Length: 396
Image (tube, rainbow, N blue to C red; front, side, top):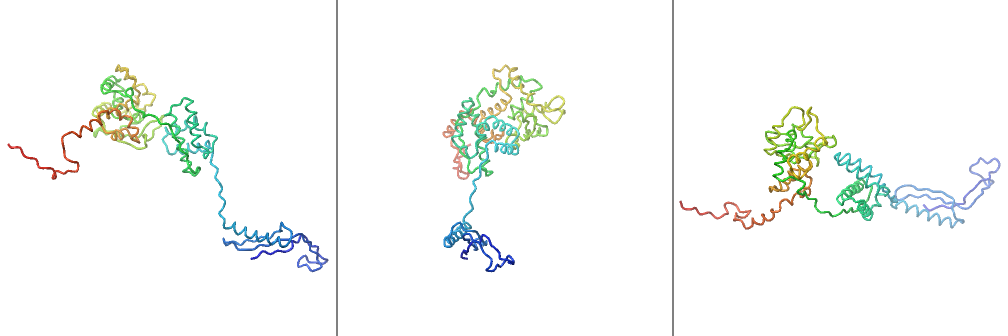
């Protein structure tokens, strides 16, 4: 419909006895400029109507204005809606959400560690920044600041790991379009050194010298590789003394029992020495294998000095920690030629990278493997018995 243009009636001076509508020629109309009237169907199917006073003087100018207005309305109806840019939250605000997410999805010990990293390191540095303002340059400044605080590169990498997980979570929750690259330090492999575990001879002396009430505890620890928290949470129902195995189902952390590290159970065979020690240790004081005199559960603080004290009683120069029993178990397996993949499964490591910390304890593996090339021929791998040449019988 073509726009209509007519004088804009500002006021009407009604004649005497005028009913107020359908005024006759005796009524005087006071006009002030022009008005336009638009009525048109939009491409969306909507009916648009507008009747307003023209901002321009003159009939011709008002008509042009009305036509331009009609065209503008038509274009706006088919134009895409303006995109409103979402404002990214502050780091300090989203950090609270990330910690709540960690509490729901991670082990309690992991959540505890993250809370300290956020509180002491990440929030003080990034807290006032919006997530989309954090880039490579800000990450590098954070690394430099932590080096000035004399934090180790390994510790800084752990902080950066928590930062990386927070930014990826923000992308997953549509709070951030793209996570920046968080690049850590290249650090040498954290190998298990000889002062962290006992040799075979030292282990023998260590077990013999342990206090009688703790001998089973240290024997099982060095012969199964269970973490201290897993030893403290071990129950008789987890043991099969006939088949000679233990199923690790839980661990103890700050007086709280939960699933073992990695979130899944694992089975560990018992060596003859560990099996014998457990049978001799059998008691009816309570459900826990290692417990107090009244059957109560032991705590980390109660067993903190057990291993160092056994080292002292054995006259060893080394003073390994409780975790050193786990290192001893893994080191002995690797030194005996057990494949690293099997060691990984026995220890319950989530990735083989953790187990590779013991790989340097097998220095002759590559050399022995190459020597096999010059050994006696045993036939090709794919060769079947029927394909091998018949052996001549020696005369009797």
